[in-house]
Image (cartoon, rainbow, N blue to C red; front, side, top):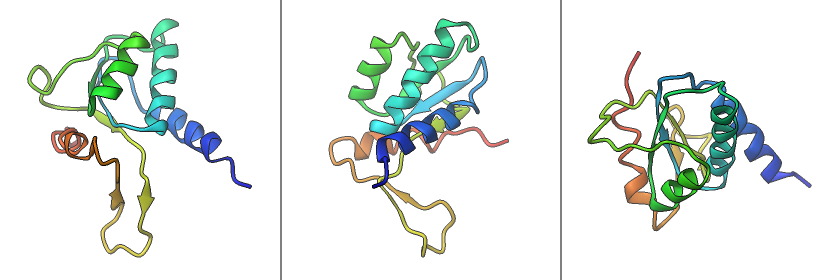
Amino acid sequence: MIDTNGLKKQAAEEAVKYIVSGMIVGLGTGSTVYYALQRISELLAIGELEKIYGIPSSIHTAQEAQKLGIPLSSLDDHPRISITIDGADEVDPQSTRQNWFRNWETNMHCRSKFCPSPVAAK
């Protein structure tokens, strides 16, 4: 049997490795993101990350990030996001578009789609 939660945690912790101090971080919604929030909180607490701001894609994510002491902001204050971390409920390997992920979180679907578009291009 596959340990889905273990894989989600591993994916989240790997994604957090791409965050560096000073970034504006888009925060998606769901269990994978919750693992990322936990790791971000740990890194902030030990000083390995500083001066980051999270832009939450849902009220639930905002509440969880606040509980964990992650500084939050908004697209009004930070219109360019450095990186976004989100999970994917479904990945279509037959899609002709690379990295075409579909997130089916019904209550959070609309709001979560507002974060990825202003990600800064490098």
